[in-house]
Image (cartoon, rainbow, N blue to C red; front, side):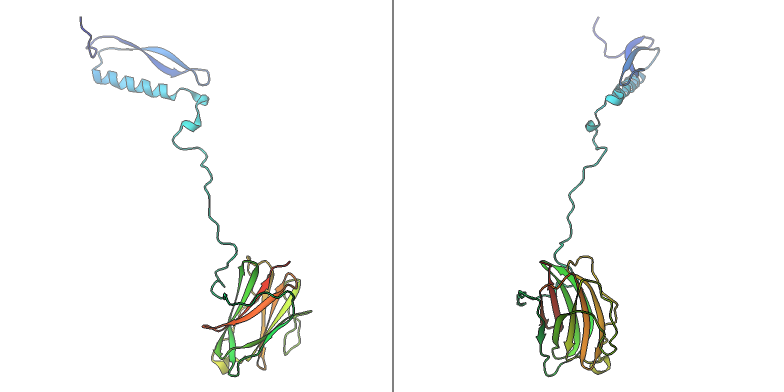
Amino acid sequence: MGARSSPGAGETIHGPVAYPGAGAGGCEAFPVSTRSRTVAVLLSSLVVSATVLAGCGGDDADPSSSGASATPEASETSTADPVTDGATAEDGSTDAPSFPGNADPDTAEASSDALATVSDIRLGRHDGFDRVVFEVGGSGTPGWDVRYVDQAVSQGSGDAVEVAGDAVLQVTLTGMGYPYATGVEEYAGGPLAADETQVVTEVAFDATYEGTTVAFVGTAGRTPFRVYALESPARVVVEVADVG
């Protein structure tokens, strides 16, 4: 008699079906008997058997065979550029003077038509130095006298000014005017600091008095610095080199 492709009604079918055993990762085979089942029921039983077999293995299963890893691998992350701060990225110049080999005072004369007011102060980190920018509005180009001092003292009142840092760089801008004379609102912010800087610890704005405006730059030491002016908008830039 030829082979049959499927069992007939009323026939008994014997086959091993795996169920998890008592041991970890073990399976035991038991006979299954079905009576008066249709071919569709048989196929359903076989699918169930295959599913149970797939579940065997218990703790011996290799987690790496799973399509998704249980612990995702750490991906590479890009970090922000640590040497250029966005606050002062546009305030530098390729024509800036070189840093001197000492920490002597730096001075420059104001233009004859200078009458300006500090409108903003910015602080940022760059490769090898920290930058402090004094943006001014009004007319002409301010002059400056920038030097290290033993103590920060407010002009006019003579009161001591608290500035964080091991050294104090006093920035005196000349050719300056009061807001009512220049039509420019004066900077009114408190002490300025930035997490990214390495040598400048704080910038404290003092006041404008008799044509000069003073601010104090706290630093980590008396390191070399350079000063230069930029236009559009008018700015006086002070850059302090890293500690040796």
